[in-house]
Image (cartoon, rainbow, N blue to C red; front, side, top):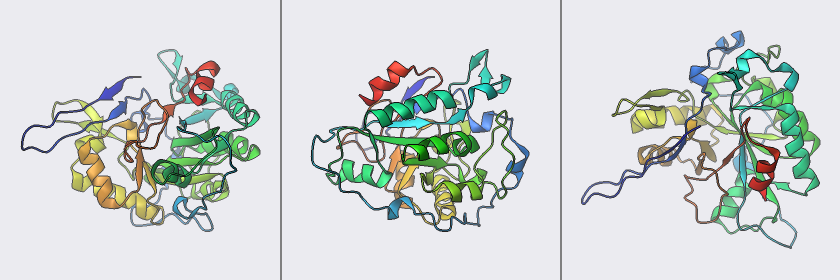
Length: 314
């Protein structure tokens, strides 16, 4: 894992180019070629995802929380793949070590059980926004659970655990990867949600944008491989993001930067689409006063120990 911090100073008379906390994944969708066959049956860009009775993140009710100690900062946790220990194999390994993005089902269950036993409240993204921007008082033991990319194992392995504990979670999906049919679960492959699985799990998950098809890397002006949200033009970023918003039925509450990489150009593009907030991969708690397009999130990795997890939420 490596962090990228690009922050350039203001030059007189010139526009400031801000940078980002970037998270250089050892695991990336475009670099991981073990895709299951059903990924050929995806929704075209001019077709929205039929989410039926699912409540969008923007339409969720904001709860009234009981009086008592309130949080001054909230930990936002990010997961990617959740795979049962017994299903781990060579495809989950990089150079003999488990892929950083693969957390076992058993590890995830232990973490969620700890949150439940300690009395944590899982906030919706709308509640997070109102906490950060509108002064909403949330319980001292609040947490936000997020998943990136929209992997099928999130539905197979994580969803039942979240539902058991009545936890809410946000899933930032790459909308171009959502499939039209339910395929057999094959944990050795990279698989994504089917539309039917999204519909079945929206009592727990709210679905937000992780781009339409920009979870890819190109080369920047220095010839370094970077996220499309860094290498593509503002116009192209707006087009891709608007496509994901369209496919999500107009949902534009939140966005997660692919690979955690972005620039001021990226943020300007998101503003033009009308997105309310965006999430990075900076490992710290979110506080009122944070830039609304630079909301930090802790990364839960294969190397994250239980003691480190407890420290993150402390």
